[in-house]
Image 1 (cartoon, one colour):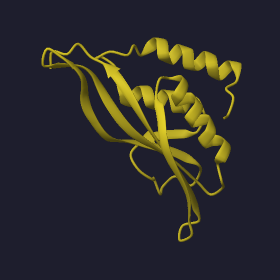
Image 2 (tube, rainbow, N blue to C red):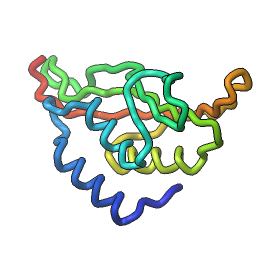
Image 3 (cartoon, one colour):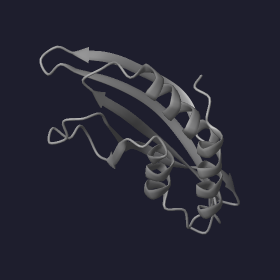
Image 4 (spheres, rainbow, N blue to C red):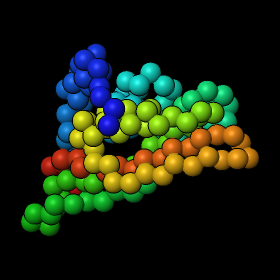
Length: 138
């Protein structure tokens, strides 16, 4: 697994401190900032054909209420997919993204790497889930 540099660890620590894990968490912004530590353009959505350089996208696959107590949920579980798009194989970049997200509290559960011959694009996908703490009064 890719090791994080001291600077990357410090940036990640600052981001985690700025985004407490509760119902006020802007999960989209949190994910973008964590992945943004790589220095690679990151955006929510799918492949952006207007970007001719390596870029990272992510989207929410699903979510669900979990950890019920007295008929209310105490947490929400979010499943996301992160995709790396590049003209070159970005094995180490995928490792870095996985390490950053895992250190930020995400759990990696599967991935898929493919080369798309028609476009000449390497597509590396990684799926994670994240549990957000909530008050349970939804």
